[in-house]
Image (tube, rainbow, N blue to C red; front, top):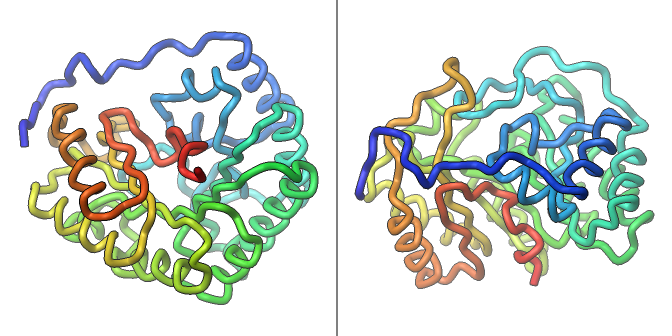
Length: 284
């Protein structure tokens, strides 16, 4: 790979502007909602919010896990807000969103790992927005199949769970997660309901080698995943894992072509790509 140590000029983000961006920003603040766009410091917030597209993060904004790549706060979460499902669903209706992306922090502190709020949010979103399509970007739920079944039974069009990195780096980067467990979650979803599209994403620039990337892509495809996203890792703060290198845009294009040849239905690959980038295209 063509590896670059200094931050290249293609890693540039436009300052968020526009009427739709301001409208969504005001709504999120008014209803005290959480979005991964903000909590995860997503570089595409201006583009997506400008289109009226956002990824709503439920179950608060404090995660019980301490992944070294993630900008979301870690610690002891606040009490569950049982009004949150309706708040999110009504906000989606006000914004006239056609494709909703829902995600959450990990809530390993809860007996049901947060699945009750997950189910209620999906159901309420569907009830108030009957023509909507839904993508759920879920945690691994510790591989608990009974809990995963609850999500499957709500019939979202897409269920996504991110692998994030290659096997060798998983323990260091994702800490409490397991590479094989994540693959098992993705495969289980497809086995339970072949009509649900499955999706995962990985980051580059953490120190992985090219052969490790290809091995990971093969593992993902063997787990019957339909949609793949590949993006450049960007360090959220000095406390997080450092960027080891930046990957040339041409390499992202090459990996996209490799993924498509492997049989993925859709591959989104680029320096600023994140798991929910162009998510509305992935249901078509």
